Image 1 (tube, one colour):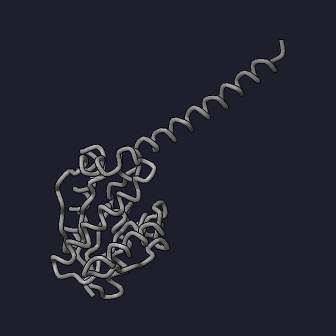
Image 2: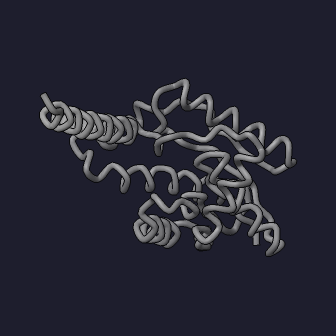
Image 3: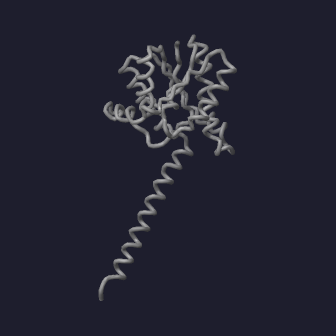
Length: 200
């Protein structure tokens, strides 16, 4: 078996390749992520990917094109379905490149993340596989979630704080703001209570 492994980022690559190596599966890593925003975030993830694969002598392919326009054109006015489009874009390109480079299977490190829609990734990949000349290799990498985190921290890999797209970035910081405002309201209420309960 020869697998082209779509790689969303270096930290998510650490555990899946460990499993592939244990199973003696030949693989190459493919960095293709047109969804990432902003450009400096794209560059950080790309540079970190390069550091890891070069350090470990993995075979790899990089699509250096910052494809934000392509991604946005696919999801504009369909933002609630953005993950579906995002998965499909990346998996279709991975399957296409796998066929062109004589890999008989393709897969993705998205199957490692506990935050991704696992069943939708599988469905998209199987649909793409049925229309191409390469098979989809399914592995549930999620049991190694914490192990991958621990190892990526030990390796000092840059770890991002949101999935990648402009919408997930907004949600990340919106949620952080909501938590800050909630804490502030609680503190204000406690301060008011303390002030009113203070003896004259």
